[in-house]
Length: 184
Image (cartoon, rainbow, N blue to C red; front, side, top):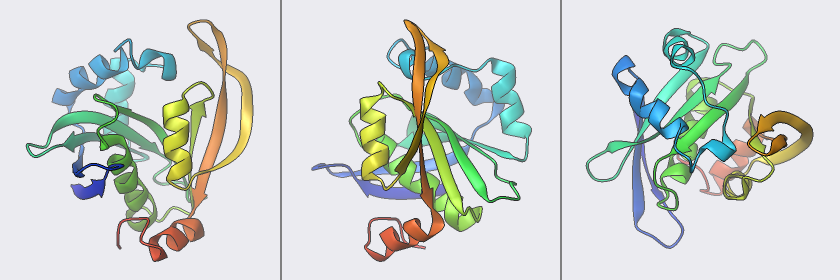
């Protein structure tokens, strides 16, 4: 398990830990994915897709545990963990309670896992253009926009576009040197 205390903007530190998802966690994951607050921003998976992601070595499926009691606060999925190109994707990150710093803290742990543990050269993601909260988070956490995939996923009111964003290992190292990332 990987843990961090991360400062949420003007708040006390958010205590966050990532632990591997177990079969017994899938109902929690599916509940978060189908929460009406989250549906406009993601394309939910079926149970079998999550079960496969837990077992498939190219994936890392984590439960985000947060707070003093380290209760389940969300989940995140990494894809490409065995990529010969060292390109790792943050496929999905969903937190239960927005605005408490759990997403930012979990993202910092995910970057540490991607670059330090899995040896990524490039850590990338895509985000729906109308997901302003997530886009702002990724921007302030050092992800650079790379391009726009126009109207590529079906949303509730038509087709949505995605912004592709990434961070390179050298950029992560530069941010770490400025104490903007978790220490090695």
